[in-house]
Every structure is written in structure tokens, then in C-alpha cells.
Amino acid sequence: MSQQQLIQKLITEKENLYIEFKYKWYWDNGTKPQESQWGEFLKDFVALINCNEQYIEESKYLIIGIDENELEYKNRIIDVNLNDNNFPTLAILQEKIIKKLNDYFRIELEEINVFDNFTLEYYRVENKKILVFEIRPTKSILILQRDLTDKKRTEKKNNVFIRGIKETNDPEVLNASPEVLEVLSQKIREYREKVTQEDRKTKSIEKTINLFVQNNHS
Image 1 (tube, rainbow, N blue to C red):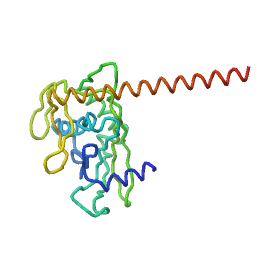
Image 2: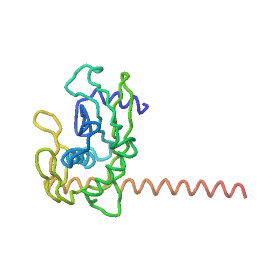
Image 3: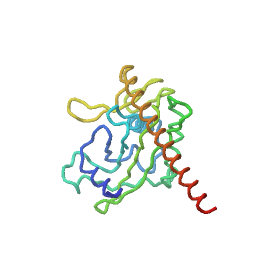
Image 4: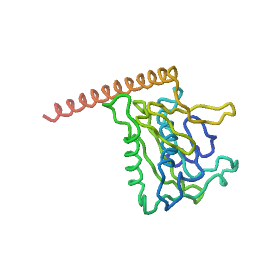
């Protein structure tokens, strides 16, 4: 399945623990974002990064330009374009997001950098443009290192944002309890160790192949 086909498939799904749809961006095009608007974005975004113990090894998606209330496929898609004087390119927007993540969050394991562990790209679907953030599986939890104000309230230092499901089956952003945080941290640790072992195995195989090639050309 190509990436384009994957995105088209994701659009047909309902919001869940690993997919968040937004009808439009967090502030109007051409306006200077307020800190509360950045706060709203960062809260949603980091909740997807930390996500939930059920989805440690999967990618997560924030898709801008989708009206989840529309049932018909073509009516769900809203044309979006974030390019303006504030963020003339997606590369500049990504750079700003990484800076904001560094400003507001700390990594549970400081030696692991997960702030840039995402991509953002426009996709054209039904002749309309949507913006897709793909967040790769994280190797460490992000923890709020200073108070963060969103549209409704101020989130306190040391909060950990995760994804949860309401009784209505709609996803929501939650602050992880100590018990949930312990389980999540353990699951991410297991994933990190698994990836490390796979990397070592791959490097060992590559080294063996290189030695074989060298010996047969000497």
C-alpha cells in the first residue's frame, strides 16, 4: 500500500486513539498565533506522541482538513493551505514546532531525542489539499516542563498528556495518572529495547556481508 493509499484509507476511519482529525488549523491563516493557540496544538500533538499503551509501535496521525462529522467521503475533505508570512514553508513550520516542543516539554530519557520524530506533508485527495502529520513511534515519554495554557485552562508542569476514549467512543486528551504513566513508561521501555536489539542485529548482518564482500575481492 502506498502512502497516498494509506492516507485515503485513514480518512474513511473514525477518530480513535491514533488518529486525530481537524477541520482547520489551530489559528487563522495570516494571523500571528497566540500562546494559547500554540498550547492547544501542543497538547493535542504530544498526546498523540505519548498516545496510549495499546498503540506503542504504531505511527499516529494528525490530519488537518477533515470534517469528521461528514459521513460521505468527498464531503469530509476540506481544502487547506497553511503557507503564509508566518510559515511560508512546511519546513519552517516543522522547525517552529520542534522549538516549541523543546521549550515546553522534557524527555523522560534525556539522551534520546524524540522532538523531531515526525513528518508533515500535503496530500491531494479529491482534488483538495490536506495536511498530514505522521508521528513515528516514540522511544521516550514527553513530560510538560513548564505550565502550558490552552483555550480552556492552564496545564501544570509535570503533566503527561495521553490519548483516551470517552464513553461516547470519541478520543480525548487526558493527563496520565501515576498508575497509567508507570504502565506506559514500561511499554515504551520494552519497545525501545526491542528496537535496539533489532538495530544491533541489522548492523551485525551488514558487518558480516561487508566482510564477505571484502574477502572475496581481495
